Image (cartoon, rainbow, N blue to C red):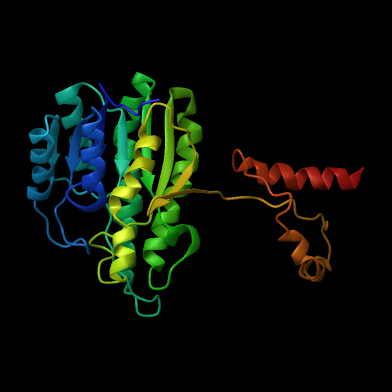
Length: 302
């Protein structure tokens, strides 16, 4: 099956450089009309210029594709709504949203300024929420949509010096989980991509041979699969250096201890059983935790 996007309209945020640029170019090369969004700021979010987005649009047009530039900050909901309207006015619909915009303000938590924490969360989490909210009514009306969040191994598993970034990135997975459930009846699939790639955010942090393996181009195939009409939903794909994996948030079988004064001691004594992963599940929704717990209580009461 060919992964094609003829007739589809895509919005890619943070697409003026790095991974976002490659996402936009790949979607356009496979037939999508692409709105290229980029504030044009530095890695830390400072500054701004629409020239980065326009340069990518020029690349797409030079290759025979259709594209428009947009310089909105994803932190500005009104500007994001105008961005989505720009795509709808030009092409009549929005099929794909790739939430790629992000910044870094790395420091150990002990040394981190809370303004830097807040801004990173604002760009990654609220930026993604703004974009999802703006495209949602259009996708509902047409009974079709594909949304790709950009999460990170830092969000999934942690990384020193990135408490703000990790919190914001895992929050995008939480947003994905609920939007996938709510979007299902409208044909809206919502997924997340955890890239391992050398971009201007990571240069200077790794040896040259590793940087060569981690070309951002290697991440793009996972985005294309998640943005395609054949995409799964509520899926987190990890991609880098030619490797592809999936990450899951699971729930163990656990134990039933009841309610009583000695439960803390009993829980401490049986913690290894609670942590045993041999019968873990991937819940269909958050209700699964309560269902499992109440089920154990009802079984114990029989």
